Amino acid sequence: MSTTPSAPNASAAPAASPTPSPASAPEVIVRARGLKLAFGATRALRGIDLDIATDEVLAITGPSGSGKSTLLHVLAGVLTPDAGSVLYGGRDVAALNEADRARLRLAEFGFIFQFGQLLPDLSALDNVTLPLLLAGASRREALTRAHAQLAALDLGDHERKLPTQLSGGQAQRVAVARALVTSPRILFADEPTGSLDSLAAEQTMGALLKAARAAHSALVIVTHDARIAAYADREVIIRDGRVSLNNGLLAAARPDGEEQTR
Ligand SMILES: Nc1ncnc2c1ncn2[C@@H]1O[C@H](COP(=O)(O)OP(=O)(O)OP(=O)(O)O)[C@@H](O)[C@H]1O
Image (cartoon, rainbow, N blue to C red; front, side):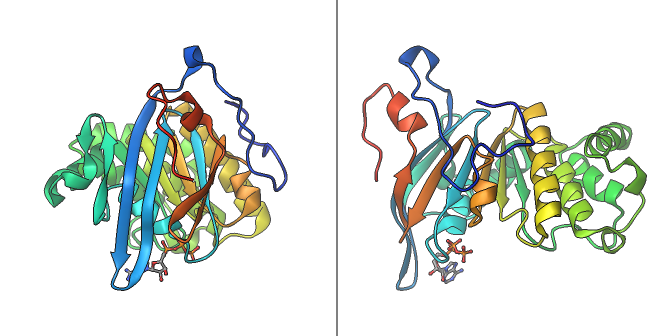
């Protein structure tokens, strides 16, 4: 796994992954099996198997409407699948009640979306402090950690600004800081640079990767942009609610020899 955040591993091709030997098999943090979800007559997920490794950067790509965002939300316990399981730390996230899932999301997961995720009436600093306060940290501790996270993302000079006073790239970096300040085990990002021009997108991706690696968080990115996917260690392509390509790191490494759905 590369530790260099700045350079995509290929211009537009799927990320290349080494074929691991059993001795170097990655630790699986999320194991999803048989995920199905329909919205009325629309079968958004039609039976998806997917593993996510600790510390990996995984890109979920595919055409518009193929089920990428739905899959992300099911993996993150935001949506409940009609069938299938999402094992995380020995628990099936899909089977938890809403209160337990909310607790799990707050304690273990971070989220970054394309638009409108910062609370508009709060400064950058207060936006980043909030998840720590919600998780029970003291105000002093929350401020210390929020300052450090903002500084790590080169936002120290912008702490007091409201979201409307930030550029699009700065606002997304504040969103990155807010998502990572709780040191989540997994960061889920849905088109995190989709609203940015290419320079700001590149800077935001660099910052996101660097911060996620520093926090030892797995990073799952939904994107339709091949340039963004090229930053990932691994790419999974979704078509019509199914995995059409999984470039294989974990499928090859699984000790039980179970076949990945393709
Ligand atoms: N809340 C919903 N209600 C009804 N249909 C939905 C809902 N959410 C998603 N869908 C449908 O499910 C399918 C998959 O949607 P999803 O948003 O997961 O696709 P996507 O691959 O993320 O698309 P895009 O790249 O355009 O964001 C689409 O046909 C979509 O219209």
